[in-house]
Image 1: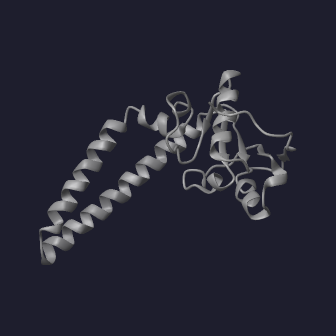
Image 2 (image 1 turned 120 degrees about the vertical axis):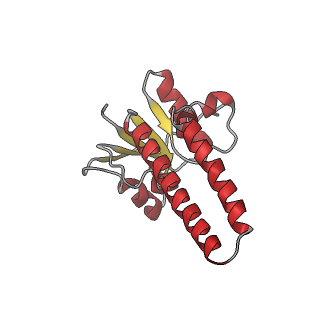
Length: 173
């Protein structure tokens, strides 16, 4: 795996996209974690969600999702023990599907040189098992201590580097 680092920003999501795009323009394999909202196509490509959508296993995941939705609809028409069994199958299926998506996300993030997220985004379920040799907090003066702790918990060592705020960042578009 390439050497990874994480960058956490106290800034809005749009600025984390700007940072990600800047890193990518410099040849760094960077990806942004967090809710993508509705970014424009050039911003979408910088998200982990875009990489998940392009993953070869995505077609099977979507087919499984559709099967589970159909089974849930069928279970709603049942009664008694057959309904309970069908609902258990649905719950187990969703748990397995979410586990597979988490594994794919970890695989994708693990292959990136830099993972960019907001401070709160560092607490996303996909980030919880991850540790990074370096965590950089952009605009640290704007960060609250509790939110900073979310990002600092991702550090594998003691090296955490806050960055001073040098004024407004450029617009992502």
